[in-house]
Length: 146
Image (tube, rainbow, N blue to C red; front, top):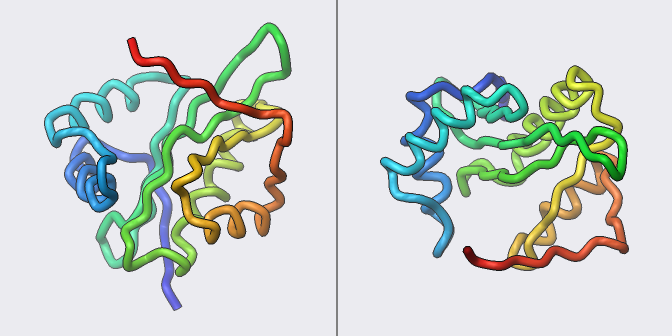
């Protein structure tokens, strides 16, 4: 059984986040970019990066943003979730999702959304459903480079 503590990310976590991201093919920034983005996100009061820690090591992270909209009630969007391959299916993602739920409640959000890319594993979808996330059949994501 693994025990995970969850805490807000600090600048020193950038290298761990970089390693987690770069374990996936084609995903992730360079280390210097990761460091810069993490500093920027930490200073933004409408965003949070939380890390899951096991035995003193960062084994996963989640990045979420509090969104106010003129079209719907305030919500939180999970924009990134990364787990070290060894710790997948061992509870790290669930610990992070539960921590984001608490943060969303503090931000007075009415819901949490988590757009999932088709390349994400079915096991993640199973974990989300287990935590009472439902698939919104109306959603489609369009992407344009700038």
